[in-house]
Length: 516
Image (cartoon, rainbow, N blue to C red):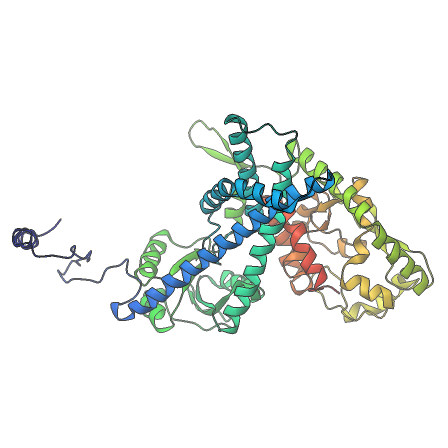
């Protein structure tokens, strides 16, 4: 509520025609002293930095808009060109003119739906491939409905819609991926990384710091931690107590605060958020196990207390039909497309060393039931008999057995292992219903026998050819971290998540990241 003096000054100014700026939004403390605007991120003396930051954000949005326009335009052009070329009627000028007539409305719908999905947000907040797929599917549905309802020229088929959708997924995803890579390299070369402080309890602080440290593309530097308990010895720098948070944010030039404690006191969390926002610092929360589980909680009405039931994370009903159909269709297509490569690999294995081409490895499948997991042979005949003598050289943690320079590998086998080409015969396991394209990786019998009871949840579903292991660090992660990734996949499963993992597996395999 404005004061009487302020009202009088504004009225006098209006009477004399004097121009006045709107009253500043300034908080007044209990002692009557004026405090700075809590919504202003930086002091006025640094306003030029704000202007630069605004320009940088504007440039980011313009670049993404341009890339999306290029992707949508190329998708329409390619779909039309392919159709007319097959029909023997391809004329460049005709295809170009038709593309121009379609692209304006298509691009407008794309931008609106992308903006709704935060596709033009900052790097740390921008969704990935799954959201791109979902948004482009929505674009196709909206435009198809509009074309039918508005009585657009009758199409002999609906190819232009799903054809453009397929090419748009390829072009838009590729362009955005390239933009992420290039901008990431430029920011890394310029030394740009967000400076973060982790707030929580000992074990949680260490787990979150380790996860961020193992993700070099996260763009986050953990400056230190603030612990609610007696300060743990975790190798990080202690930044004092929570009461000193304001000073810490200023002295350490912190960009974001990460809360890493599922039991963080509510009253202190509110104070922390207010303090961080007062300094223009973003607050993020590392999810706990319960927060992950609640996404699949189903409401169960109760007489006196509403309850939520956590059902077993298994694929059943329509989920099973969708996932199994996707597996059958994709595996069949991959077997046909990759058949020349499979033949060349089989020939190389056969000529390089004595023994069969296919190795049948006994693995635990759904419910722990054993099955023959098919692989191209990568080791010399009788290699399994040498494993007991190599146990002391094991480089993996937990139940896994991994040796970076395994002496049992053949020369061809070493190449196949590095790029995971030895796994391709498992497409046949997928067709037989023993595996899925995406899911928890099946473990050899030796590793399976060393699992703890809490690990067994991963056997509620079919094992997969690839999974979050393969796209999240692979052999660099500890075994318990890998199991937690399996659990996260089970809780968050969707067709789009499967597609995302499959797409991300390709660069992970090509670069041989973490494979041995």
